[in-house]
Image 1 (cartoon, rainbow, N blue to C red):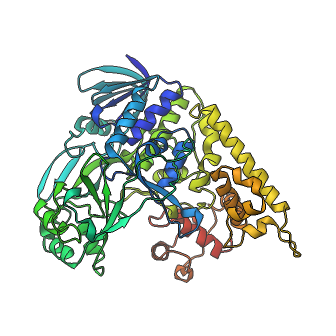
Image 2 (cartoon, rainbow, N blue to C red):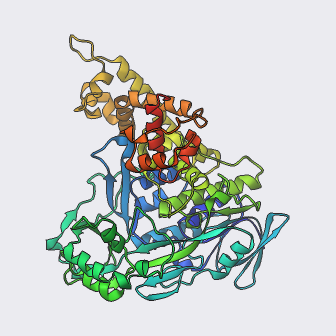
Image 3 (cartoon, helix red, strand yellow):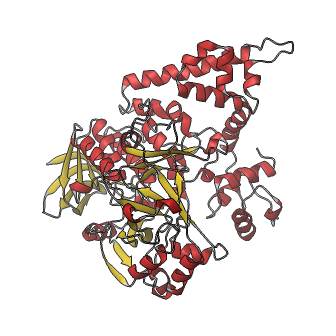
Length: 600
């Protein structure tokens, strides 16, 4: 049997990879260890979040599946950061966990040019530094032009719960041992990372009268441009807090926690630490927020977000029952940590192809990232580029000024990775341009070019884009019926005015689609800032080689983050290019530095 593209791994990266390659006309095979857990949510039952929501919107604009999937299976929708500027608004949604997986499985099963096989890749045959064949655990040999590896946490995975540890890719599933050995045999440099997950508790044992309810948005914002309106049954989420007693119990048992006994030797995500790390790192805090997130309407399982842990089960029981509303709670699944192999991503190209072997691509957590959205973004890009390579076309590379996906991949391949990578709005220099609301207008032309976007959807997007341009211009040329000459645009720029106030003056505008109204309002209100950012994009293309002063006192730059001041003061980089590569220096810090030096 022969395929153009073989994708190993049926998680969030693997699904986007196999769908994009098959939709681009490639004969594709998805091979995964368990067909019943395709696109399974191993950790939190949610999609999106700060920075992550922007990734999902971009995946959708490029023709990926994740946005449609969460619109179809979501049970609780929330736009985050609405108290801040539009640049950092980020959509997030809870999913019906089982329905999400079933939906994605049905999509891949019905996709033309795509075969699905349960099995494990155990042998990779390379000739003249090119991928030629793979061999499965059942000794099935398959020819291929491209291989995309998306094994998630399964490479040499080991689960830790207290003093117990055992091989697993995730709880209840076998790890991938031979593929891990094969990757090393090929000369790929690998390391170890760690992540964790919290307990799942029975909702019938929660005292909801003692905890705070968190409602969904009344009018949820869809993730997909194709979705006009969210029409799903909504379920409430809840908030509670740890307390001093919770912390005392955990603190008293740190000598049994694998993170502190030396049993776990790898590094976990700094921005999503386990509860035992939180109480030691932030010892001055008496409490930490806990989000209770239902995993679906047809299950009693509730995800305890904020309580990721690998402490022993008896300590998990005692500690969690000190939390308000959870005094009599019953744990259905215990929290655990998992260590796994990853490859150092400086070994891959911006196309996600391995530098030393043609046709070998890596996507997802194997590249050192954390999160479904980061994985799906890479899977989509890997699938597109594997297909373009077979077609002998140039790879598709998004720049930092084009997309959050561009920032994600650029960070991976150029910066030293010391912990699982997670996208944040603070990593993105041009976040006012790269908003979640305009992803389709920025990127859909690429999706259409690759054959991943339906022509009708593209035409609809172009019509809305043109309407935004035309009506924005009209608003600038229309004036209020008052003595002083005030344009509609200047009127809309006032902090207390919304587009609905323009509709009262111009009733014809009321029939415009909501996303058109939103874009016009943002473009008008932030016009000056947007122009400045576009100018910065142009200037930034020439700032990489700018020299920095010797023995400069970086602490005097108030707009730098505390970490940036410390790192820059310590390393004293000689150029902007060198400064950007220092771990902990964000794109926002570089921008602040350049503004202070009057380069921008």
